[in-house]
Each structure stands twice: as C-alpha cells, then as structure tokens.
Image (cartoon, rainbow, N blue to C red; front, side, top):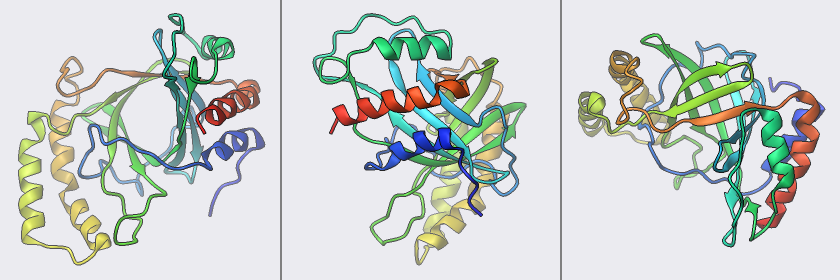
Length: 254
C-alpha cells in the first residue's frame, strides 16, 4: 500500500510532474542488494539539497514507499547558458537555502528542465553502506517498465543532516569477472521478454555483490569511487520555501 505523504513533502513531490531524465554515467548492469530484505534509515527520509562550494546539483526527496524502500524524487539544478555566479560557501542546509535565495533564476542564473524518479534501498557490504537507485516511471521499447540499469552509491554520514554519496564505477577491474560471467550467462540463456531478462540479471547479482564486498573498504581508490555528492538535509520548516524556490527554477527552464 502506498504510504501517506505529509503535506510538506507533498509540495516537493508535485515538482515531479515533468519529463523524466536519467543520465547513463556509471550505470550498474545489475541491481545491488535485495529491496525485499532491506530496511530504510529514518534519518535519510526527508528533503535534501545537493550542493558544494562551487555549484548546486539539485534537490532530492526521500519518501518512504514502505519499510524497505524509498521513492526518490529529484530535481537536478543547472547553470543557465549565461551564468556568471559567485563561488558558494555551503556547509549546511541553512547555508544552501540562503545561497539558493540569492541566486538569479533563468539564463543568467540557475535553471532546471527535468525531474528524476528512483526506487532506492540500502545494502551493507564489506562493512560499508551502499544505496541502489533504480530508475522508475520510464517505458522500454517493448512497453514494459523493467529498468535497464542501476546507480549504486557508497553512503557516508559526515554529520547530523549531512551525507556524502560516492558513485560506484562498474568498469573497475574488481568487477571484470562478474561482468564476463554475466555476459556469458545472458548469451547462453536468452530471455524472451524484459521480465525474464530481469530475473536472469538477479541470478547474477551475488557475483557483483561478492566483488564489491572485497573492495568496499578501499575508500581511497579513485577508480572505484567517484567524487562525492554532498547532501544537506532540510529542516521541516524549510520544505515549503524550498518547494517554491525550486518551482521557480523549473519554470525558468520551460
């Protein structure tokens, strides 16, 4: 059953009624972890601004879908073609909101043109916590809604209300054996439809998890983990203001 959405969070969720876009950078060919056996972390539920001292990346809402997974609604923020903004100084959600208030909106400021939707869940491997993002809401050429790729992140809690996400690179040497085994398995067991293809992929998931478990703690391996995205959690009282500000940014990109 779909959970009730608090009115403040709902204000952010309404921003998702625009085309869905997802980049293809660092896509995992299989999901990591089992969403049916996961558990959400209540501290992650809520609305987060992604920003650092050079730019805004977006606003993301983690809405619990059930006790195991979240619906993630994200609105990426981009610099307009004539952007000439000043460097930012962001160390907290309050800093991010203050900076957002001061930004110009439009071609000479910040803008947004799309939203992203993901199903997300947590998995612990090798002493590290990972989050899998599964794109949702899209339609394949065959008319199915089966995902074609996943994003996997190492998640680090830096402080109260602050997270860092490090994308996992599926082309790292650690996954070479898992990739070769997956390709051979799929070639030998040709799927008749998208649902069968997904079931076959899940049979290969343990190989990828074993590979990631072995290298999970290699946090200084720049070939394994990408540069961090820093998430700042918004206090409840800032939800509506964030929604209004982001709505302005979205409208500027229409």
